[in-house]
Amino acid sequence: MPPLTDFPAGRAAALARLADFEPGRYAETRNMLGGAVSRLSPYLRHGILELAEVRDAVLARGLAPGAVETFIRELGWRDYWRRIYGLIGDRISANLGPGTSGWPSGAYTDDLPYDIQTGHTGLACMDTIVRELVETGYVHNHARMWFASYVVHHRRVRWQRGAQFFESHLLDGDPASNRLSWQWVAGTFSAQPYLFNRENLERHSGGVHCGECPRARADCPFDAGYDDLHGRLFRRVPDEPHTGVALQAPADPAPPPLDAARPIIWAHTDALSDANAARRAFPDAPVIFAWDAKLREAEPWSFARTAFVEGALAEMHVDVCDEGDATGALLAFARLHDADAVAMVATPDPGLRAIAARVAREIRVIAIPPPPFSVLEEPTDLRRFSRYWKRAAASASNPTRNASP
Image (cartoon, rainbow, N blue to C red; front, side, top):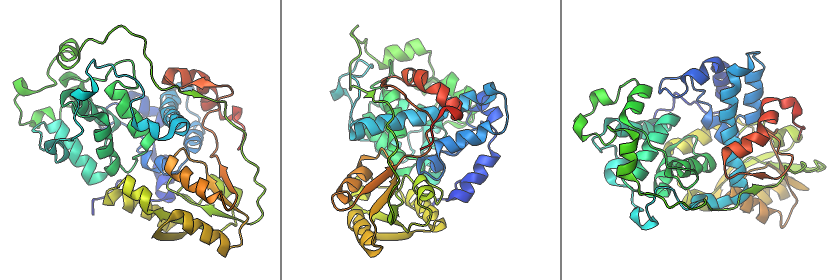
């Protein structure tokens, strides 16, 4: 089994890690591979911790606003990605824009080369990233960007294939954050593709990779200035306005009424905590988690990812059904308890929402949103993070402005 000691599963471990996090050092060191990052992402991805909960815990330490502003903004990226995911669902797996590399779609391959998958490119930086990914289920965000840039721009692999490889192994493999970040690097959801060079890598890694790299410096594909790299890797893009998928998000809706008398609770992979919003709304309701074979087949996980989820479930007060039909399991559990509703934490995941829709044909489903990280009081254009953050920053940084769900 891959070593998971750095990420023990469950809420108790998540709260301990949150308590140990030093937000005052985050802004200064976050881009360094050894920086003071929170390493909370696996817990946030699976709803073991909530965005608003983490934000509130950091603000409660009484630090100067400037000391936590960068961290709260980074939490905002996760909220932003998930809003887009909720808006367009599986369309996040297709290019959201025409691409800014200048290369046509046919210039990219669907196959992730074997040397990349196995960590045998001969580039110490890239091979180390792959080993860390497979062995630990975690990679620093800056290293993720380097790897994605190498795969898409240097090797011309479609970003979807690289994102799939990451998502199968990452303990925090959230489709929204992962796939949209790959699109951002690829230039299909950004003003320009993301590039890095050797100087950037050495500065933020402390030179640990380059010093042990078997490739001679003259053979390093990253040892160049940005203008040279841009000219080598990209074609000139015609001066045309950027178009793509419409991402106009409506104002946030009001939460649903919590008027069920005998609900059951569905604990899914976005809500693996006894403290989630549905449990808080109905603390005495029986809880079920059901694996769904079709979802697992569509998005296969590594053993480490599955073990992390099962570890979180082991800490919860929940009945686990592994028969593979989540819809049938939920309906059977509801009949067993003479339930009048199925309560769940609201999720942007289209697979989970499809299960909820099938269940709702026979029994009421109440999708309860977690406490809001931010509030959008009017329709907002989500094609750029800056547009979202302009509307969201005030409520995200000042939780007293947010209405309770």
